[in-house]
Image 1 (spheres, helix red, strand yellow):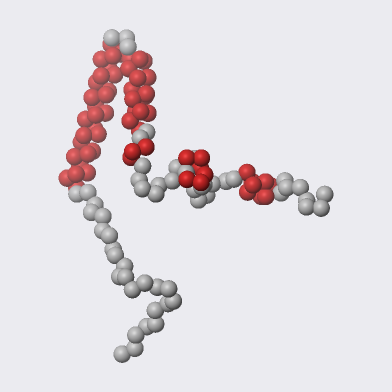
Image 2 (cartoon, rainbow, N blue to C red; image 1 turned 120 degrees about the horizontal axis):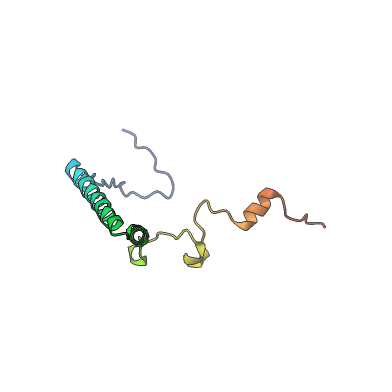
Length: 116
């Protein structure tokens, strides 16, 4: 029996297939129910505050709360994850797909000619 030759520089370590378990149907329905209950509670409280003539204040404060909850803190950043803002990355490294000023000039052909 012939063995297939291994390419140069390849390692003999087997490939590992890491399986991420999917949430069960019960977990998904539970999260859906909790989200539904939160929205229902928010609507009931909105109705209460509208009756008390503080509906706009409740709505605006709710928006600020959602913005606060929706932002991640720096401790929640994954190892090796890059920021969308290159100034926060080590060495100011840009993420893939970032349009730089040099690239824009090159694409718009606004660079002056070398001999002029």
